Length: 114
Ligand SMILES: [Zn+2]
Image (cartoon, rainbow, N blue to C red; front, side, top):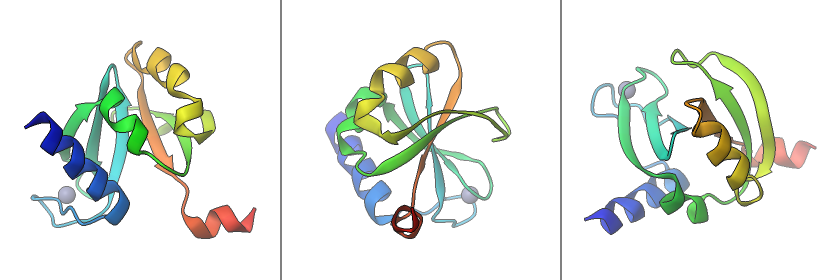
């Protein structure tokens, strides 16, 4: 069961096939707090699914901005940016303090524009 959830999340992040049960949105925030990785609907802010951070890190490919946010998704500051694998230690350290970290994936267009 745990493994099934793990794979399900990987597919969702890469293909954006998951829909929010509440509003039907297909966009989600990917968030980390303490040892948990969870998704929150971009439109209605409903939490969608959660797993452990460690389970999902190997599946997070690409370039991300790691942004500290509050409960209302206000951006409080940029923690780091780059490949998630390079910053797992920082993410774990900051999230363990109770900070909410938004793993904001850079889209391909933005990446190419640099
Ligand atoms: Zn929603």
